[in-house]
Structure formats: structure tokens, C-alpha cells
Amino acid sequence: MLYNRRMFENETREFRPELISRRGETTAWALALVVSLSLFALHWVLGTIPAVAWVFWGFLLFAALSISLGNWMDRRTVIRIDPDGIAFENGLRRVRLGWPEIRKVNVLPARWGQSVQVIGDASHFEFRTLGKVEFQGEVRGRVGFAAGQEMLEHILKTSGLELVKKAEQARYYARS
Image (cartoon, rainbow, N blue to C red; front, side, top):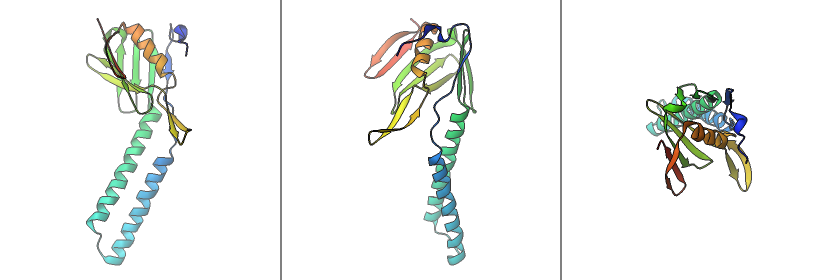
């Protein structure tokens, strides 16, 4: 893929990640509801609920809440790149780093795409390059940022970082 050098010059660009299907979230909440109703029925019939049933219900509730939080954060994630630096938001965190503030970038292998850690003196954030979720040879979804590789190249170029270590599939960049 060709890197469009003019892509970021003299303007603010906004990037959002690919969004995954909410089917898993819906399934988790449906299972939590079914088990909740089953617990109610069990209490009505037996007058008590076994501890293992509470543990199972708690696990399903925790899973549903975790999936919902992850989806909520994904839908609020945005990375803005402008001539002065880069900003990251995800609903829970806001990080703003000027180009001179970026001290290190770590590029690590991930199950889908690559994990890019942008590290400054007082704060940091992480994003993923585009990854394709495949099942039985068929692409079932896309995760990460579609322009993630171009964003990474621009961050490295503009912040003046250089490759300091390469280990297997991981790369580490820092100021020389």
C-alpha cells in the first residue's frame, strides 16, 4: 500500500476503528436474562438457589457487562492527527501528545493486526492496525483502524523516532 504523504499535512484528520458486530453482546445479555429467569424459577420451586447457580449467573453478568463496555468504548474511540500532534479518546480516556512529547512507539504482534503503543512522558495510548477475523477461510469481520499502518508510519516519521530493536515480530522505536 502506498503511503500518501499529503494525507496528514496541514489538516486535522480523524480516524475511527472498524466496528465489530454486536451479536456477541446480544447473546451474552440474552443468556444472562435466561439464567436470571431460571434462578427466579428455581427459587420459586425449591425456595433456595444453589451457590453454583449464583456463580454461573455472576459469570454471565460479568461477561455481558464486559462485552458492552468494550463495544461502548470502541464506538467512542477516535484518533485525531494534526500538525501539532496526536490525540486519542475512547470514552474513558483522553490523551494528547505533541510530536516532541512522543518518546517511544512499540509495535507488537496481535491476533488480528498489530498493537501499536504510543508512549509519552506522562501518558500513553494503544491502537491496533487493521486485522481481518477469519473463520473457516471466510472473513467474518474487521478490527482495528483501516488506516492504522499509515497512521503508524506518520507517527514515526513526524515524531522523529528510529528503530532501536527488532525481536521476532516486535519492533521498538525511540529517540536516538
